[in-house]
Image (cartoon, rainbow, N blue to C red; front, side, top):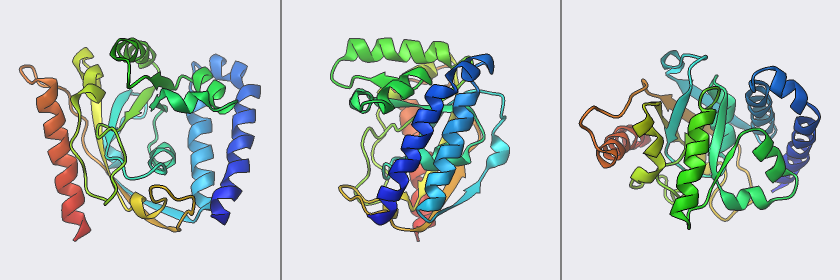
Length: 230
């Protein structure tokens, strides 16, 4: 728990810094936000004793934008991906996070998009906003919809992949070990190693449904996670 409370003031520092640097963010065609997010994530992981081993970086073209689809093991997944993928990435996050004072406003300024899971019409509108912003940044989604409680990959929901129908490239990412870093319902951050596997980008097939795409990505990531756990 000590590491968690040490990381909080670091996060607060970067949030305040983001407000001060917002004009520069606009001048850099909104790339500064990705740099700040990556640096903040890397510093927080280092403080918490989290080491990351990344495989498949050659599958990323830095100037391209992607819909990053990853399995969801803990809340630490966000800084882990933010720190280790060399792209201008944001998060499609549940709207409740945006209600956190100051942090929520900073996320909104820096193109994080709030998703209302209880209101389909609002959720679709938010995804339309994200589609426009994908001209200059990538978005991270967790198709499982909720964190795994046992490290196994749950069923992927097709709703998280609706942007695939707009022709965006999908970057599948598998995480192993994040569930041991910050367990569900705990504030105690455990030092350790997380493995990240970045697969080659893909797109929805010409005659493929969104549900079939979700199942394909689910099988790809789940098979890798299960094979590497043994």
